[in-house]
Length: 210
Image 1 (cartoon, one colour):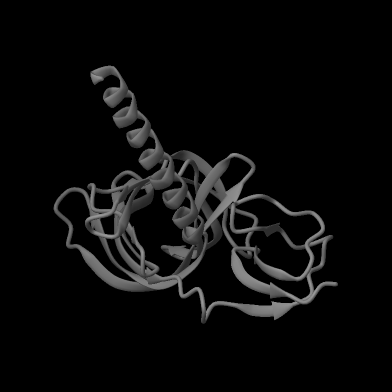
Image 2: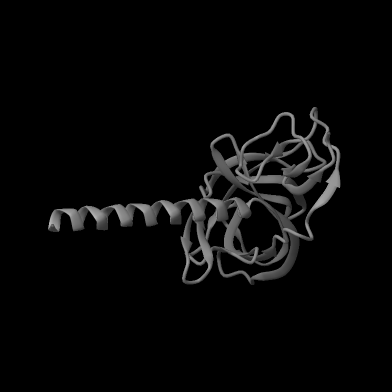
């Protein structure tokens, strides 16, 4: 009798785990897209120099390419240079149901050479998350702190807050298969999308394709 009861309990635990995993995976698909917001920045020079504070407005895109989920800073400005895409690989998340949020991590930049927008220059950038309070909430809000720099003696700390509004962020168009990068909400790249809701070039789009 005990053996039967134990098997029933194990089966129930396994079933609940599958349901939770499926629900979490479905919710994770909602994290993809463009977050519009701004960061309070603080640049501190080593050697006791005064900190320079400012506010920068830029977008953050979360998208899946092949088997890698990326966090991308769009049009981020560092000093006099603007970068169209600063890409952090391997975004991984842990769901915290009690707080209705996802805690996330990303791989650091370790001297990646990135082209400055509108120039022929490539700068060697370093960057990483700061601390452990880096979250994406179920309501579409993202909050995280990161540093980025070209020279170790001058680092810029960024406290970013943004919002991914699923409803307001949807536009309608016909896709150009030769130029546009299209994903479904499961993170799969789509070559010939039909009518429906997709993520195209990091934005939520309602397609009119036949």
